[in-house]
Length: 245
Image 1: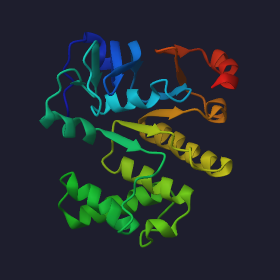
Image 2: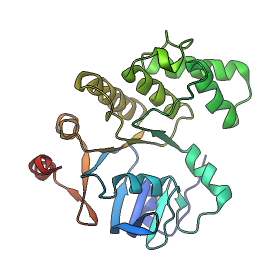
Image 3: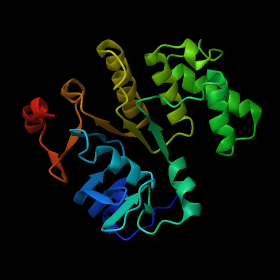
């Protein structure tokens, strides 16, 4: 079991913590002085117009973007000054879902999932098979293991991407516009799936989106990125803001 270590005594309550953190996109600050706490089991949205820093926050959480000003911790790991050898440790605690799925197109669904498990240290063939079957069943794709990604619909590919994200039982799922390329009905199914993972497994879910129907229909905490800030807003305020997002 991983023991949380960090600067903040109150971190034990939070899976993700930022204190006065400047969020970068390249060399440019896109969000100044971010204060954010996300507890285990939270369902959180980060919303805002294109270019307001939503995805940059996700990239900072995964240590793809450096944190140079302020303080950040994710799963007990301090982000500022993080060592290169610690980044894979951090990322194994996170499951990431992308708008464009990012499946390996030259191999089957099964082989996509097996590749992730083997690359993260799984060696026992029976345990690998059992885990793949388990996650495919969890996302309703148990009959699609032999399919190639191009043989699946967009919604099916995203379900496989979510299966991939939960393979290693992450502490948090980070979903960057997970319904961006999907029609409304298919998007609804993906949101139901993410809600199920959150409620049944207690997995923290953080979703970046500009789709106002999503955060209207699926309740959660909402952080709004606007004017180089990102601040939590009351749900009613967000619905009011939705017309401008």
